[in-house]
Structure formats: structure tokens, C-alpha cells
Amino acid sequence: MKVIILCGGLGTRLREETEYRPKPMVPVGGQPILWHIMKTYACHGFKDFALCLGYKGEVIKDYFRNYLWNRSDVTLKLGRNPQITYHNAHDEEDWTVTLLETGLTTNTGGRLRRAMQHIGPEDVLFTYGDGLTDSDIGATLQSHRDSGGLVTLTAVQPAGRFGELSMEGNVVQSFQEKPAQEVGYINGGYMVLDKSVIDHLGDDACSFEQETLQALASKGMLRAHHHQGFWQCMDTYREQQLLDKMWVDGKAPWKIW
Image (tube, rainbow, N blue to C red; front, side, top):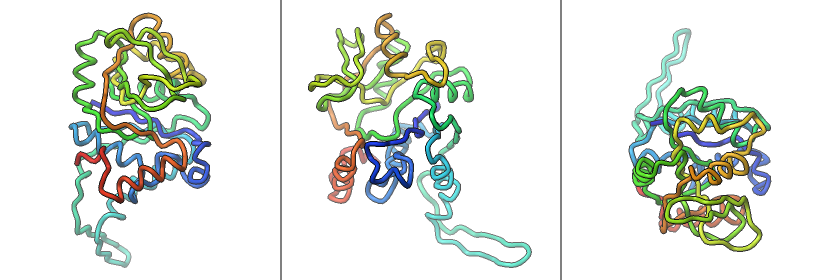
């Protein structure tokens, strides 16, 4: 099952870091937050990734192209027929990473539509490149299969400013993007999408949150898997510092590997 991760936004509220690199490449404990997200999925058995690139996508391409080079001891044989010998193995050798150029200004729904067109008709896992959790991905997938909805999102409970969910059981009845006051449950990402959700995505200007999720909620086709554990986004420099300190102190709840 493929995992689609949005990696193309400008990350303007984290300008201290994103002036030089895309937000998914901002480090937490010496590794990009994107790596932590992918490690979470891999620990649950999902190791086939499609990354939707946009702003400074070449930084992400360079990172994965040079992944083995930067993590290994190497021996170089110079000359007209050069050879490289890598002396180390790493835990990510069974990952498959597809790097998709989805446009510099494409909105979230447009990026998702481009990715789903590329990978073909199949259900997918889907998330953003800036949030960490200890949520059970397999449990979310099972919840989705049992629910009969087109999209199942992971509902978490931090403070406000995100997309507020009104729910009855696991049926999402309305979706309000970024309310002003503090809320109960919000969309924490880490979603499961039925393959037919592509029929509910618009053009490159389509907002997955403001258009697709709201429309699905109004039709009773949006579900939630409740997660009571850890979830934290990295939207600001303060949040980046918080996550980095958790890792350095050995108190990173999302580290399940």
C-alpha cells in the first residue's frame, strides 16, 4: 500500500528554516522531520512512498539520491573506470521512494490528485510532511475498512487553529478549517483514502481541506479514527525546537523503531 506525503508547501510560518529548505527537510534530532514520518509508516509495514514535491523539491531529491552515500563508509577507486564500494547497511534499504514534481503553487488537493493519477487506482495512506505521532497506522487502516467512508482521518486533541471536526461516533458531520478558538478534536492527518476519492478532487487550485473534506463530511463520507496519544505538528520555530528537544532528551513518543 503506497503512502503519499505532501512535501511541497512554502512553510511560511517557519521562515527561519524554510528560507533554505522545504519544511519536510527541517531537522528533528539531526534527521529531517520527513524521515521521522516515513520511519513511523515503515515500522507499521508501509514502505512504499510517493512524495509530492513543490517548493525546493530538489533538496528532497538530493537527500534521497545521496542517502546511501551520506550514511555509509565508502571506498573509491579512481581512474577511467571508477568504482564505489559501500561498507554499511541501513534499516531503510527496503524502502521505495517515488519523487513527484507536483508544482510550485499547487494546492493540497491538486497535489494529491496528481499523485493518485501517477500511482494508479488503489487505496492509499496519506499525510502531511510536518506532523509526528505515535498513532497505530494499522488500526487506522482497519477502522477505515470497517467504516464504509471514503476518507478516514486521525482525530487528535491539541489546542485550536486547525481544522475542527464535529462528529457523531466515528462519522464526521462537518469540517471547519482553522477555527479561532480552542477545539476538541482536529484533523491530525495520517489518513486512509479510498481510491475513488480522486473523483472528489478538483484542479491544481483545489484545497483538500477546505473543499474535499468539507464536501465529504456534508455527504456523510468522512470518518475519524480517534487517537488519544501523542501528536505534534511542526508549524513554527518554537514547535521545531520542542520536537528537537524531545528527541535529544530521549523522550520522543513517536520513536517506535
